[in-house]
Amino acid sequence: MTEKPPARQGVSAAVVIIAVVALVIAALALFAIVRHASNESGAPGSPPVTAPPGASAGPSSPATGSRATTQGQPTPDGFAYQPLWPFGGVADAVAWQREANPGGHQPWHLDAGLIAQMFTQQYLGYTNVDKIVKTDVRGEQAWVSVGFANPNGQSATAAIVHLVQIGTGSDRPWEVVGTEDSTLSLTTPGYGSTVRAPVTVGGRITGVDESLRVQIRALGHQQPVGEAPPTAAGGTNSPWSVTVPFSGACPGALTVAVATGGHAAGVERFAITGVRC
Image (cartoon, rainbow, N blue to C red):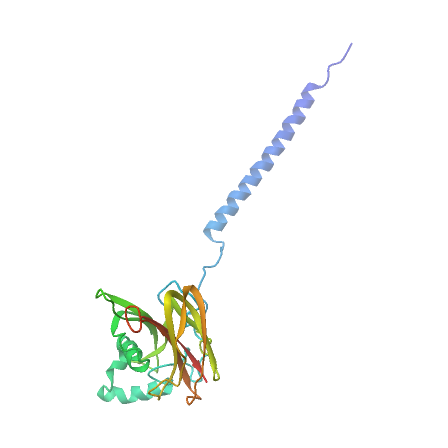
């Protein structure tokens, strides 16, 4: 007689195969769950993005170029920024601290807003920029918005001046070290760099029918040690560049400043950077 095939053995083999496949799938699923739980509980992910050491941590703004207050090489006295005004360095600030403590000599050195305003009007000569619009002090740094009254009587910001406390101990005075730039920037020469005359000065600007005036200032000099003729500029984030001769200020720190205006006020925007020669 004809024998039937061993159906029971075939069924048993199929059951074994299905069981093995099920075990493999279960193991893979368990591995995925354990790995996911481990990542969420303790495994390090991507590190947070942080500003590089020395970058200015001031108010954010739609900058058209590199911020002018990024730290350069430390000065010989260890100050991390390029000191511009009113002191020439840490030693000058410490000398003022020694003189000031007994009798309160020139207490305005301790007011970041007044220092920014005096720097703008008296040192740079932008006399129409006569308002302290906002003062933002964060620890040993400050950002002071200086400006003017527009034709509608509202305060308009011309620049955000960056200041840092300088000296030793407590009651350290404020020192101007640069500006936070937005629609008018000054990126050349590089902050804290060493320059020789004549120097190429440049940056970017957004505006219409602008006339840029570049000057170079040095401590101990009543007038600019260098100037360039007015330069026409405009557009959206457009580059600008001029060559500026200067003399009589080296060796020392220089403040390079650019300003534009003439629409609503003599100086409506300005930016600075600090260099050495």
